[in-house]
Image 1 (cartoon, one colour):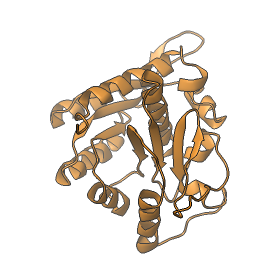
Image 2 (cartoon, one colour; image 1 turned 30 degrees about the vertical axis):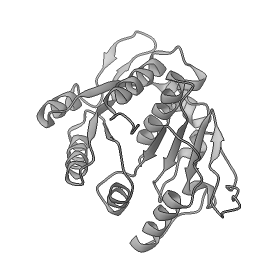
Image 3 (cartoon, one colour; image 1 turned 90 degrees about the vertical axis):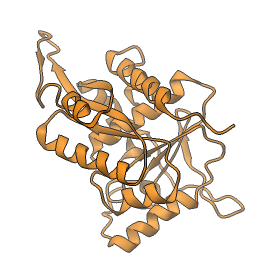
Length: 243
């Protein structure tokens, strides 16, 4: 997934845990070609193996994480064809000892390819969240992603408008660099809700680059509050767990 989208997903995962400390949250980085969760979650090293030969997720900030980035060198490119990618996805899905989780957040790569279809068809998914900037080109992909999940019968919980507005830190003038309300217009067309807006703010980027995501390092900031609100909206729309 593009780093900006992974950044949103990991902050949402952290927000789910922050909103309810009794919940156990996991984060699966399913972007085989460009895993970025290890750096943003400040995690390094190889997963340990259980006696049953399952990988133990690495953990930070209370979140259990698994990523292809733990299994390859940081600078090593993944130059694989489809079958090898699918084998890696299967390993991340089936050969990890997650323990008892309340939420597993899956960071999928962009597009509607093999990875998305494999995950959607092989494990039960409670709901999908579509993340997009308001830019017209990005909205085309957001619409395709929504329709793909609908075709494989995965409920789409709503859309998140990323990089919705930039506020100048000096004069506080607001600029809609990627357009205004494009995600809201798309949501109306698709009959879906907008779960929230994430501003374009340097602190969000800086904190993730340093391995200290904004929800953890600046919990009282407007950016962190936006993620916390989105997490609440996601939980509200999830189906009730089986008794």
